Length: 96
Image 1 (tube, rainbow, N blue to C red):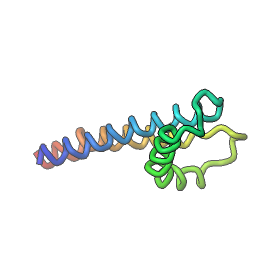
Image 2 (image 1 turned 120 degrees about the horizontal axis):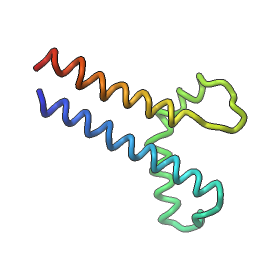
Image 3 (image 1 turned 90 degrees about the vertical axis):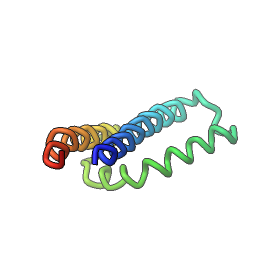
Image 4 (image 1 turned 180 degrees about the horizontal axis):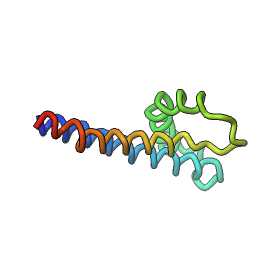
């Protein structure tokens, strides 16, 4: 059972870093720091968008309009933090 909890925790941790990379990439893209016509940059951006957008889209629909500020990644990071904490402090002691 410990291996299952560690695997779930690892997946949530990796997704956290992908979410952070996606936010940083979007800032770099918006401020024209990276070359959007580069094929590698474009493929990285497409990957990050395809991995994060299905989770962020429902959060964005529920948020009020904040005038161009997107806090959905922050809310998702809080949700992931809650899930990881809940996993180790509540579920794991019940199973172990």
